[in-house]
Amino acid sequence: QDQIVLQLFACMDKIWQANDFDFRLSLFNVVQTQERCGFIEMITESETLREIESRSGTIKGSLGESALYDWLRLHNTTDREFRIALENLSYSCAAYCVATYILGIGDRHNDNIMVKQSGHLFHIDFGKYLGDTQKFGWFNRDRAPFVFTKQMLYAMSDRGTSNDALHRFVDLCCNAFCTLRENSSLLLLLLSHLCSSNVLNLNYDAVRFVYDRLSPFSNYAHNIAHFTELIVDSLNSTWTTFNFLIHTFAQTTGSTSSSNTMPIGTTLSFVPKTYTIATDGKIKSAHVVSYDKRTHPTKHYLYKLKVEREIIDDAIMMHNQNTKRLYITYHYRTYNEFYEFFERLNRQFPLSGLDLKFSRQTEDKIVAQRRVSDINDFLANLFRLTNEVVEVS
Image 1 (tube, helix red, strand yellow):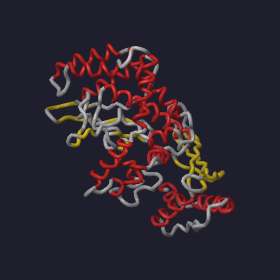
Image 2 (cartoon, helix red, strand yellow):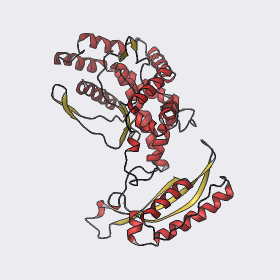
Image 3 (cartoon, one colour):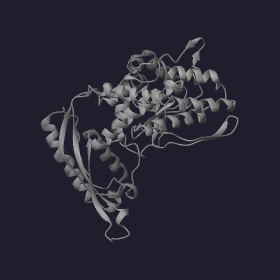
């Protein structure tokens, strides 16, 4: 079933691409080798929504709105990276809302919806499809037309600061839906040919199901209004959030959260992956150039860090011996994050002599100005140390 659903997703993507729409789908390969056995391609640098939400706590993560936004912010430290990640989230989420609705994909919860660090959202596990919904006894658990939550909108709208985010998302969904409807013959033909594959629930009733989903009305304006209503219904569905919460409780009972199984000391809490000189270049200098006040969720200051990296340019390696060049990036960090970094270095290199004053003072402008000086003194002393300490840092 997974293999067939992914083939249909790929067909939809080709239709969109042929009509100049790139919805940034993350498709993966599935190969069946025998009954209930096969291979699934791994998509790296991705986590399920449940894993993302669990970082903020079981209840707060499932019921709150900021978990996905915070996770994307964590993995996209520059403003440009973060803006692209939010765009990727909007486009891919719109495509999967349309695709899962048309194919009647059921059993949607926060453990079979995943997000890449680049913002690309994608679905996995298609055991329920073509109108076969997941039930709890006689009760239908798939109550919303598709999964589109306030948590997703919160991230797309940059913490709710963009009033146009929902309108843009509706436009993306309607473009995706109407494009498939206008080219429905190709999709229905593929589905009809697949009916001979002897796969469960794949028959001509399934073709009729998809046909009905693609053609609710003959009028273009009615189709736009119809799908917009589906988006609003999904966004306002409290059952989706409740279903996420139930699933999270069920999965975490008697097991350890993935965030607690990571070896202590391997990464920093605000940079949950490892970087190397080979992949990201050697940092030549770093210093704070300014600071900004933020008020969400409470008042605090972010310090803008300018980082100069020396990287090897493979493109000119064949023609010029001097293949190194400087690459400048900017990152925002809190004072607590700088202090966590300082403490980690002191534990690993106790004789380094590094110092960074820390006190839990009220966050205000005077304290922020003083901390800029303290951080820059710490960074300057760090780069004066031996290569062993600097390169590990």
